[in-house]
Image 1 (tube, rainbow over the protein chains, first blue to last red):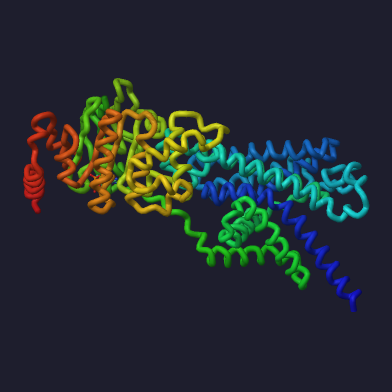
Image 2 (image 1 turned 90 degrees about the vertical axis):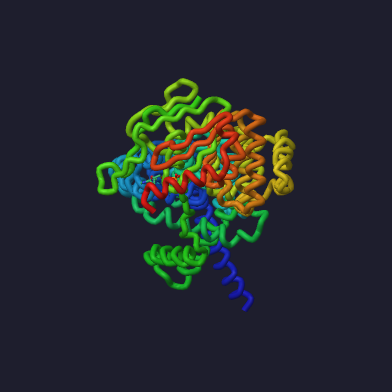
Length: 306
Length: 257
Ligand SMILES: Nc1ncnc2c1ncn2[C@@H]1O[C@H](COP(=O)(O)OP(=O)(O)OP(=O)(O)O)[C@@H](O)[C@H]1O
Ligand SMILES: [Mg+2]
């Protein structure tokens, strides 16, 4: 009796830790989506390309022997560059936000394949990563199951704190202002276009970094990992913010991270009860639809002119 | 000095809805003038302000500020010297940011928006004083999002925000129209006070003929893209509301209603 209860508890713990890890991997991406969707009011689909971009860069560099930590940094910078291109397409060439993202996402598909030298799958199971190195492997046996979570926790915490800090700077204020009421930015004699581009740069840097972490954790790059990233990020943002909006001391950035973990726990439960992994995208879509309708979040803020 | 020289403006050019609003439109406003602008709906008041501020392109003509040609200067760069308040109180503030954050933004106009702290703690007392001078109790609500304030409170903040940094020109487009009579009166008094204090060159569009007559030292009436009354100095002082009403009636008779 007791044994079977323990067995169940252990299964739950294993599922929970798996979901927690997954949630934390995607949390940094969700923070990026939070910047574009919530702060900038810009539904940025290039995320579906910049997430695998980070993964492609990382997997390729790691097979070439580059230090895993350095690949995080490089992914961040390359993601920033891709975000800048999305911004320029939207701002300078006046392409609608969704379409600008789709252009970038489509272009990145090819670019990601070029980066890997044409391979749609690059395994790095046996390579050194931020999760698999002599330092971590030398840790005591008892903490081994939690090491991945701990490493992820510190990465997510660092990225969250950096974002919180940035949003308190003058530049961060301006970024929030451009999503809130872009006429104020113009009134401050600032170029609202440049401000939006800065937002897209930061957001996609975060997303690509998340992609890098993803590749190192799962041990491979796969060209299809990008599909649906943005919707997943949006789901995390909406779940987190709506669940925690009554709790005033929780910052939106923390709520997004919690949202990402909760989302992955829901998915894990669904799979435990027999759903196929291939059903996931449909579930995400339906879930997302329900959340949007329930929270009325789909209403884009009206920007009327007298 | 603000100058609009021989401005031609078409709306919807090349379509069946093509409309020539301004044809060789000229206006110059001297430094220190406070111009009130009246005129029927659709007479081109807002369009004129939009042209001045660079919010819409023009087809011909040139725009000069203090002698330098700004015809091709983008809207946001012109705002360096211009403060603008709109009819809609929602347009001048960021609703999801707090009063303090909005004030901090406005205070930083003309300076770099870099990685320094967004709010300068040393300035908070100064913001409080400014807000207190509005007499709306906003000084005790620094951490409240501006979106939860009333229209009048937001408009007062918008006015405060645009006049906080050193600007030369103040552009007001029916900025009291959405407010109740008492708040409108308050905003109008604040406007007059700040214009005098900071010696701002001001253009104020209004449908309130009493404000147009009472405030400012020059009055324009516009009709179909032209200035049909331009009174300044003694002439403006002696102008009465009835004179303006007569002119309005005369116009509508000429137009056949
Ligand atoms: N974006 C636009 N496209 C087409 N026509 C326009 C546009 N903006 C203004 N117009 C036209 O130009 C004319 C002048 O409009 P404007 O907004 O300048 O008038 P106004 O004097 O500010 O009127 P009101 O007192 O109603 O605010 C109107 O006939 C209007 O239909
Ligand atoms: Mg108007």
